[in-house]
Amino acid sequence: LPGEVPTKSAEGASPTSISIAPTQSSQFVSALMLTAVFLEHGLTLTFPNGITSQSYVQMTLDLLDHLGAHTRAASDLAVIQIKPGLDAFNLDIEPDASGATYWWAAGALLSSATIRVEGFSNTTTSLQGDAQFPTLLEQMGCTLVSSSKGRDNTLAVRGTPNLRPIICDMRDMPDAVMSLAAVASFAPGTTIVKGVKTLRVKECDRIEAMKTEFAKLGVTVTDNLNGDEDTLSITPPPDGIDCSDTAPAVSFDTYDDHRMAMSLALLALRRPNITINDPKCVAKTYPNYFQDFARIYN
Image (cartoon, rainbow, N blue to C red; front, side):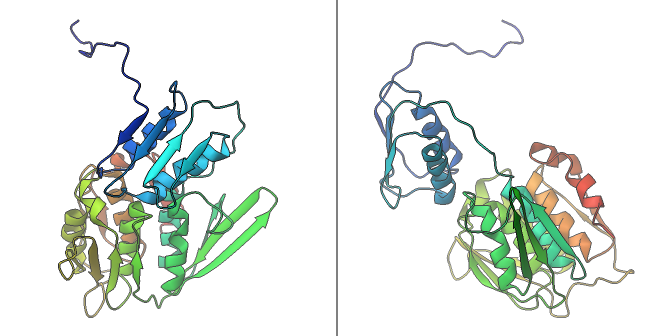
């Protein structure tokens, strides 16, 4: 019919096992895992050549276990078996740790402020890989302050004017790489980040986008470090970014990528005269981001 999606629906096959090659995103794997409990015979997934973004797959598995699903998995997740059936459940949904990384990063950049994120009291109990992000900021010289009072939990980051570069592996939190890059732009020296190759197949090629946009402030982002496509470095200019009131205006492109927009905005917390193009792209995951950002800006 005109204007209708040209699809046909029919009873499909119900395989009991699937062998999966490395995927560009773990979202496909998580979708299969969530579907498996509703299949007549469940599903066994095997990954003979490894698994992409293992932390997100582990999070999905832990969630299914928490909900009472019957699962078995190898320690390296090379084989995951999920049996059919799921009982009714009650679940308190954790806040989005990916969205929280921007505020923790903001806390790192605002050396005179402490920014608290509700719903997290530490970085060890969360199922989400991105909840580990504050530990990287701690390595860069920031202070973490946690509070837990019953169900009222907060995890705060207190910044420092003397950020330091680090070497880290972010394969378990790839969505937070750009946030770390924003902080590293003000840390004298070179920050090295491993586990980044999946960034090329996100909403945009985030590695190329970072190279282009951060260069506008004199920050050098280098990929394929020492021939390793999974590693990049962030190096601010020798004399640091010009953060004076007379610094020339800079306009950042966002590539229709919500995470590029949110991370690039962080740079404006220290460097004035910045414009973010197409800010509405944040609507994909965080429609009110810039309203919240305005609460801490200036």
